[in-house]
Length: 333
Ligand SMILES: [Zn+2]
Ligand SMILES: [Zn+2]
Image 1: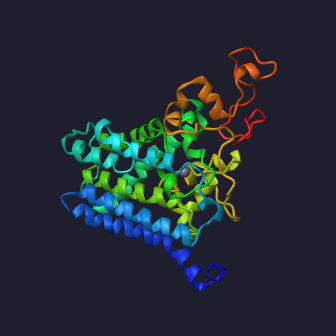
Image 2: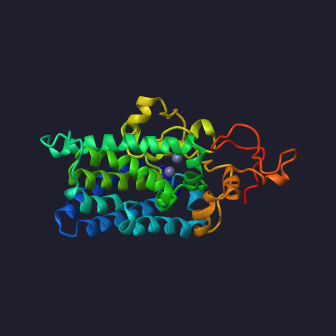
Image 3: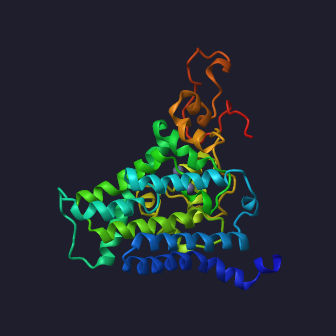
Protein backbone atom coordinates (compact mmCIF):
# COMPACT_ATOMS: atom_id res chain seq x y z
CA UNK A 1 0.00 0.00 0.00
CA UNK A 2 3.05 2.24 -0.14
CA UNK A 3 2.06 3.58 -3.54
CA UNK A 4 -1.33 4.57 -2.08
CA UNK A 5 0.27 6.43 0.83
CA UNK A 6 2.28 8.54 -1.58
CA UNK A 7 -0.47 9.08 -4.15
CA UNK A 8 -2.42 12.32 -4.74
CA UNK A 9 -5.59 10.34 -3.93
CA UNK A 10 -4.28 9.69 -0.39
CA UNK A 11 -3.53 13.39 0.09
CA UNK A 12 -6.97 14.33 -1.20
CA UNK A 13 -8.69 11.80 1.08
CA UNK A 14 -6.66 12.90 4.10
CA UNK A 15 -8.07 16.40 3.65
CA UNK A 16 -11.61 15.23 2.82
CA UNK A 17 -12.32 12.53 5.40
CA UNK A 18 -12.84 14.75 8.45
CA UNK A 19 -15.17 17.35 6.87
CA UNK A 20 -16.96 14.73 4.74
CA UNK A 21 -17.69 12.41 7.67
CA UNK A 22 -18.73 15.31 9.90
CA UNK A 23 -21.03 16.87 7.29
CA UNK A 24 -22.31 13.44 6.18
CA UNK A 25 -23.20 12.62 9.79
CA UNK A 26 -25.03 15.91 10.21
CA UNK A 27 -26.94 15.53 6.92
CA UNK A 28 -27.97 12.02 7.96
CA UNK A 29 -29.01 13.44 11.33
CA UNK A 30 -31.14 16.09 9.61
CA UNK A 31 -33.08 13.34 7.83
CA UNK A 32 -33.28 11.33 11.06
CA UNK A 33 -34.75 14.32 12.92
CA UNK A 34 -37.49 14.68 10.28
CA UNK A 35 -38.86 11.28 11.21
CA UNK A 36 -41.03 10.25 14.11
CA UNK A 37 -38.39 7.75 15.30
CA UNK A 38 -35.71 10.42 15.34
CA UNK A 39 -33.42 8.79 17.91
CA UNK A 40 -33.66 5.39 16.28
CA UNK A 41 -32.64 6.79 12.91
CA UNK A 42 -29.98 8.94 14.54
CA UNK A 43 -28.44 5.80 16.00
CA UNK A 44 -28.52 4.19 12.55
CA UNK A 45 -26.59 7.17 11.17
CA UNK A 46 -24.21 7.04 14.14
CA UNK A 47 -23.46 3.33 13.70
CA UNK A 48 -23.02 3.79 9.94
CA UNK A 49 -20.49 6.54 10.66
CA UNK A 50 -18.56 4.15 12.90
CA UNK A 51 -18.48 1.63 10.04
CA UNK A 52 -17.15 4.23 7.60
CA UNK A 53 -14.47 5.36 10.08
CA UNK A 54 -13.46 1.75 10.82
CA UNK A 55 -12.96 1.25 7.08
CA UNK A 56 -10.73 4.32 6.79
CA UNK A 57 -8.77 3.22 9.87
CA UNK A 58 -7.78 0.16 7.82
CA UNK A 59 -7.14 2.10 4.61
CA UNK A 60 -5.16 5.03 5.97
CA UNK A 61 -4.21 4.63 9.65
CA UNK A 62 -2.37 7.41 11.47
CA UNK A 63 -0.46 4.80 13.46
CA UNK A 64 -0.31 1.31 11.90
CA UNK A 65 0.39 -0.45 15.22
CA UNK A 66 -2.85 0.90 16.76
CA UNK A 67 -4.79 -1.38 14.42
CA UNK A 68 -3.43 -4.43 16.26
CA UNK A 69 -5.56 -6.04 18.93
CA UNK A 70 -4.81 -5.01 22.53
CA UNK A 71 -7.40 -7.13 24.34
CA UNK A 72 -9.44 -4.04 25.34
CA UNK A 73 -11.93 -4.03 22.46
CA UNK A 74 -14.77 -5.67 24.35
CA UNK A 75 -14.21 -3.50 27.44
CA UNK A 76 -14.43 -0.42 25.21
CA UNK A 77 -17.65 -1.69 23.62
CA UNK A 78 -19.12 -2.61 27.02
CA UNK A 79 -18.45 0.87 28.45
CA UNK A 80 -20.07 2.39 25.36
CA UNK A 81 -23.16 0.18 25.65
CA UNK A 82 -23.53 0.67 29.41
CA UNK A 83 -23.40 4.41 28.89
CA UNK A 84 -26.14 4.35 26.31
CA UNK A 85 -28.34 1.70 27.83
CA UNK A 86 -28.56 2.86 31.42
CA UNK A 87 -29.31 6.38 30.33
CA UNK A 88 -32.80 5.59 29.18
CA UNK A 89 -33.53 4.52 32.76
CA UNK A 90 -31.40 6.71 34.97
CA UNK A 91 -30.94 10.00 33.26
CA UNK A 92 -28.43 10.97 30.68
CA UNK A 93 -25.29 9.25 29.73
CA UNK A 94 -23.55 8.34 26.57
CA UNK A 95 -24.12 9.54 23.09
CA UNK A 96 -27.85 9.67 22.47
CA UNK A 97 -28.75 9.68 26.17
CA UNK A 98 -28.85 13.44 26.73
CA UNK A 99 -30.92 13.66 23.55
CA UNK A 100 -33.35 11.01 24.80
CA UNK A 101 -33.65 12.75 28.14
CA UNK A 102 -34.13 16.15 26.50
CA UNK A 103 -36.85 14.73 24.22
CA UNK A 104 -38.86 13.75 27.29
CA UNK A 105 -37.83 16.42 29.80
CA UNK A 106 -37.33 19.63 27.85
CA UNK A 107 -40.93 20.19 26.60
CA UNK A 108 -42.33 20.11 30.14
CA UNK A 109 -39.42 21.89 31.86
CA UNK A 110 -40.08 25.44 33.09
CA UNK A 111 -36.80 27.33 32.74
CA UNK A 112 -36.26 29.49 35.82
CA UNK A 113 -34.08 32.00 33.91
CA UNK A 114 -35.56 32.11 30.43
CA UNK A 115 -33.07 34.32 28.62
CA UNK A 116 -32.70 32.13 25.53
CA UNK A 117 -32.86 34.09 22.22
CA UNK A 118 -35.79 32.13 20.71
CA UNK A 119 -36.11 34.59 17.83
CA UNK A 120 -32.64 33.85 16.39
CA UNK A 121 -32.41 31.63 13.29
CA UNK A 122 -32.07 28.00 14.48
CA UNK A 123 -28.54 27.69 13.08
CA UNK A 124 -27.29 30.45 15.38
CA UNK A 125 -29.24 29.05 18.32
CA UNK A 126 -27.44 25.73 17.80
CA UNK A 127 -24.04 27.47 17.59
CA UNK A 128 -24.85 29.30 20.84
CA UNK A 129 -25.95 26.00 22.42
CA UNK A 130 -22.66 24.39 21.38
CA UNK A 131 -20.59 27.21 22.87
CA UNK A 132 -22.50 27.11 26.19
CA UNK A 133 -22.46 23.30 26.40
CA UNK A 134 -18.76 23.37 25.53
CA UNK A 135 -18.03 25.64 28.51
CA UNK A 136 -19.45 22.90 30.77
CA UNK A 137 -17.62 20.15 28.90
CA UNK A 138 -14.35 22.06 29.10
CA UNK A 139 -14.76 22.73 32.82
CA UNK A 140 -15.71 19.12 33.61
CA UNK A 141 -12.78 17.78 31.59
CA UNK A 142 -10.23 20.17 33.07
CA UNK A 143 -11.40 19.50 36.63
CA UNK A 144 -11.18 15.76 35.91
CA UNK A 145 -7.50 16.25 35.09
CA UNK A 146 -6.69 18.61 37.95
CA UNK A 147 -8.62 17.06 40.86
CA UNK A 148 -7.67 13.54 41.91
CA UNK A 149 -11.20 12.86 43.19
CA UNK A 150 -12.28 12.94 39.55
CA UNK A 151 -9.09 11.88 37.78
CA UNK A 152 -9.60 8.43 39.31
CA UNK A 153 -12.66 8.11 37.04
CA UNK A 154 -11.31 9.92 33.99
CA UNK A 155 -8.07 7.88 34.01
CA UNK A 156 -10.01 5.00 32.45
CA UNK A 157 -10.42 7.03 29.27
CA UNK A 158 -6.69 7.80 29.18
CA UNK A 159 -5.51 4.30 30.03
CA UNK A 160 -5.65 3.11 26.41
CA UNK A 161 -2.36 2.98 24.56
CA UNK A 162 -3.85 3.40 21.13
CA UNK A 163 -6.57 5.66 19.82
CA UNK A 164 -9.21 4.32 17.52
CA UNK A 165 -12.90 4.75 16.94
CA UNK A 166 -13.96 2.04 19.39
CA UNK A 167 -12.56 3.74 22.48
CA UNK A 168 -14.63 6.89 21.85
CA UNK A 169 -17.15 5.68 24.43
CA UNK A 170 -14.62 4.43 26.97
CA UNK A 171 -15.64 6.70 29.83
CA UNK A 172 -16.44 5.70 33.38
CA UNK A 173 -20.14 6.16 34.10
CA UNK A 174 -19.41 8.81 36.78
CA UNK A 175 -17.12 10.68 34.41
CA UNK A 176 -19.90 10.80 31.80
CA UNK A 177 -22.55 11.90 34.31
CA UNK A 178 -20.37 14.73 35.57
CA UNK A 179 -19.69 15.96 32.04
CA UNK A 180 -23.33 15.74 31.00
CA UNK A 181 -24.51 17.56 34.13
CA UNK A 182 -22.15 20.49 33.63
CA UNK A 183 -22.89 20.83 29.92
CA UNK A 184 -26.67 20.23 29.89
CA UNK A 185 -28.03 21.82 33.08
CA UNK A 186 -27.13 25.40 32.04
CA UNK A 187 -29.06 24.90 28.79
CA UNK A 188 -32.15 23.73 30.71
CA UNK A 189 -31.89 26.64 33.14
CA UNK A 190 -31.81 29.34 30.47
CA UNK A 191 -34.57 27.80 28.36
CA UNK A 192 -32.84 26.32 25.31
CA UNK A 193 -35.40 24.63 23.03
CA UNK A 194 -35.40 20.91 22.20
CA UNK A 195 -33.71 21.19 18.75
CA UNK A 196 -30.69 22.78 20.44
CA UNK A 197 -30.36 19.78 22.78
CA UNK A 198 -30.74 17.35 19.89
CA UNK A 199 -28.25 19.09 17.62
CA UNK A 200 -25.62 19.68 20.30
CA UNK A 201 -25.96 15.97 21.11
CA UNK A 202 -25.50 15.03 17.45
CA UNK A 203 -22.47 17.29 16.95
CA UNK A 204 -20.88 15.90 20.15
CA UNK A 205 -21.48 12.35 18.94
CA UNK A 206 -19.79 12.81 15.54
CA UNK A 207 -16.91 14.95 16.81
CA UNK A 208 -16.31 12.36 19.54
CA UNK A 209 -15.97 9.59 16.95
CA UNK A 210 -13.73 11.71 14.76
CA UNK A 211 -11.40 12.87 17.57
CA UNK A 212 -10.61 9.28 18.53
CA UNK A 213 -10.32 7.70 15.10
CA UNK A 214 -6.97 6.35 13.98
CA UNK A 215 -7.09 7.93 10.53
CA UNK A 216 -4.37 9.98 8.95
CA UNK A 217 -6.55 13.04 8.42
CA UNK A 218 -5.30 16.55 7.79
CA UNK A 219 -7.36 19.21 9.47
CA UNK A 220 -5.28 22.41 9.05
CA UNK A 221 -7.43 25.45 9.95
CA UNK A 222 -10.13 23.20 11.44
CA UNK A 223 -7.73 22.67 14.38
CA UNK A 224 -8.63 26.22 15.45
CA UNK A 225 -12.38 25.59 15.42
CA UNK A 226 -13.07 21.99 16.35
CA UNK A 227 -11.53 19.35 18.56
CA UNK A 228 -9.73 17.32 15.91
CA UNK A 229 -7.85 13.99 16.06
CA UNK A 230 -4.58 15.91 15.94
CA UNK A 231 -5.46 18.10 18.96
CA UNK A 232 -6.83 15.15 20.87
CA UNK A 233 -3.74 13.00 20.36
CA UNK A 234 -1.74 15.66 22.20
CA UNK A 235 -4.32 15.42 24.96
CA UNK A 236 -3.76 11.66 25.26
CA UNK A 237 0.04 12.02 25.38
CA UNK A 238 1.89 10.36 28.25
CA UNK A 239 3.82 13.60 28.74
CA UNK A 240 2.03 15.66 31.37
CA UNK A 241 2.86 18.99 29.70
CA UNK A 242 1.15 17.78 26.52
CA UNK A 243 -1.66 15.78 28.13
CA UNK A 244 -2.97 18.60 30.31
CA UNK A 245 -3.95 20.64 27.24
CA UNK A 246 -6.70 20.60 24.61
CA UNK A 247 -9.60 19.88 26.96
CA UNK A 248 -12.18 20.83 24.33
CA UNK A 249 -14.71 18.14 23.49
CA UNK A 250 -16.23 19.73 20.38
CA UNK A 251 -14.64 23.14 20.01
CA UNK A 252 -11.15 24.56 20.43
CA UNK A 253 -12.69 27.84 21.63
CA UNK A 254 -12.26 27.56 25.42
CA UNK A 255 -8.73 26.14 25.12
CA UNK A 256 -7.82 29.13 22.96
CA UNK A 257 -9.49 31.58 25.35
CA UNK A 258 -8.13 30.04 28.55
CA UNK A 259 -4.60 29.25 27.37
CA UNK A 260 -4.69 25.45 27.28
CA UNK A 261 -4.51 25.17 23.49
CA UNK A 262 -1.55 23.05 22.33
CA UNK A 263 -0.76 22.47 18.67
CA UNK A 264 2.99 22.69 17.94
CA UNK A 265 4.15 22.26 14.32
CA UNK A 266 5.25 18.64 14.54
CA UNK A 267 3.43 15.30 14.28
CA UNK A 268 1.13 14.64 17.23
CA UNK A 269 2.32 11.90 19.60
CA UNK A 270 1.73 8.17 19.40
CA UNK A 271 3.14 7.49 22.87
CA UNK A 272 -0.15 7.73 24.74
CA UNK A 273 -1.53 6.37 28.01
CA UNK A 274 -0.99 6.81 31.76
CA UNK A 275 1.73 5.77 34.18
CA UNK A 276 -0.73 3.84 36.37
CA UNK A 277 -2.77 0.80 35.53
CA UNK A 278 -6.51 0.20 35.27
CA UNK A 279 -8.17 -3.14 36.02
CA UNK A 280 -8.29 -5.76 33.29
CA UNK A 281 -12.01 -6.48 33.29
CA UNK A 282 -14.99 -4.26 32.57
CA UNK A 283 -16.52 -4.58 36.06
CA UNK A 284 -13.10 -4.26 37.66
CA UNK A 285 -12.67 -0.97 35.80
CA UNK A 286 -16.09 0.22 37.00
CA UNK A 287 -15.40 -0.35 40.71
CA UNK A 288 -11.66 0.37 40.76
CA UNK A 289 -11.95 4.15 41.51
CA UNK A 290 -13.97 3.49 44.67
CA UNK A 291 -11.25 1.76 46.68
CA UNK A 292 -7.93 3.08 48.00
CA UNK A 293 -6.17 0.11 46.45
CA UNK A 294 -7.78 0.84 43.08
CA UNK A 295 -6.85 4.52 43.33
CA UNK A 296 -3.21 3.62 44.04
CA UNK A 297 -3.16 1.34 41.01
CA UNK A 298 -4.66 4.07 38.83
CA UNK A 299 -2.00 6.50 40.09
CA UNK A 300 0.80 3.99 39.52
CA UNK A 301 1.75 3.85 43.22
CA UNK A 302 2.92 0.85 45.16
CA UNK A 303 0.82 -0.37 48.09
CA UNK A 304 1.86 1.53 51.27
CA UNK A 305 3.28 -1.56 52.98
CA UNK A 306 5.83 -2.07 50.22
CA UNK A 307 6.88 1.57 49.96
CA UNK A 308 10.21 1.86 51.76
CA UNK A 309 9.99 4.26 54.68
CA UNK A 310 6.30 4.99 54.25
CA UNK A 311 4.00 4.86 57.24
CA UNK A 312 1.22 2.27 56.99
CA UNK A 313 -1.75 3.79 55.20
CA UNK A 314 0.26 6.69 53.82
CA UNK A 315 0.31 7.43 50.13
CA UNK A 316 3.61 7.96 48.40
CA UNK A 317 5.20 11.38 48.68
CA UNK A 318 5.60 13.92 45.93
CA UNK A 319 3.26 15.98 43.84
CA UNK A 320 0.09 14.30 42.74
CA UNK A 321 0.02 14.58 39.00
CA UNK A 322 -2.48 12.78 36.83
CA UNK A 323 -0.18 11.50 34.14
CA UNK A 324 3.27 12.13 35.52
CA UNK A 325 5.58 9.19 34.97
CA UNK A 326 6.10 8.07 38.55
CA UNK A 327 9.26 6.37 39.81
CA UNK A 328 6.96 4.26 41.94
CA UNK A 329 5.04 3.04 38.88
CA UNK A 330 4.32 -0.60 38.75
CA UNK A 331 5.68 -2.16 35.61
CA UNK A 332 3.20 -1.99 32.76
CA UNK A 333 1.99 -5.27 31.39
ZN1 LIG B 1 -8.82 13.86 29.34
ZN1 LIG C 1 -10.05 10.96 24.36
